[in-house]
Figure (cartoon, rainbow, N blue to C red):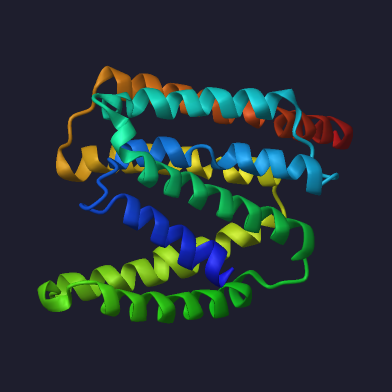
Length: 234
């Protein structure tokens, strides 16, 4: 988890989106959208107890189509110049998919909080050392905004998020859980609209509708199970 959940995947994405490589954030979101497909593919071979089914596949395709529609403006021009950066982002998605499926298969006995503590701590130390070694630190600002941002990301963006994620992993179908890759860009899009007055277009609304429709379709099997369970109890 230290290397294949945190160090390598995050480093690859940040490198791909750096000014030197320049992959647009929207294109990154689309590329990382292959994550659920990797999870579904690996689950088919490694998790016999995890059902995939037509509804989940259809939901993934529709949801991924929505991400493409939302960020279609990022495909203007020659995107082949980002080849290595694009490959890095897809590689990041593959690494995280492999770790997720392996933990689902072998990590039932692990506590979600403690299983993240050592990998995150180790990855943090490695990335801090790497950052200070290869980056220009003369421009860093240690003001209140920077400190509060790091504290927020450390607690809510890391500890709470990943502990909740792996807690859910024990209780939710792994393919359904992986669909968070579709939700995050949509949430970010609307937060930008609320807090930064960013303009929303018809593509954004159409894409969001497709994403939400895909999530609903992917969960149809679970909804039927809950409905059947409720009928049996009544």
